[in-house]
Length: 94
Image 1: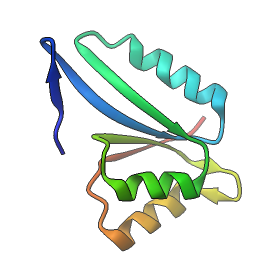
Image 2: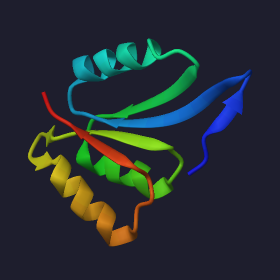
Image 3: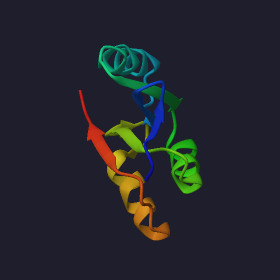
């Protein structure tokens, strides 16, 4: 995992996996309030897209919703174990 530096602030690439666009907007708003850190967020709304993005290993951290339609965040975690995901994942639920 590499967290970059840009203009004297930390730069963190965040993958947000959440089937609710409203929740994604709220998460982005909350991240934007953190001082001294620039978050580059990428939002994907489905299990399949989330797993595909995690396989790319281009993010520093993942925020993962528990409910993803017919799948759950636990299903995503199980899938990541199969390919040895190294991205830290924080599971959220509302």
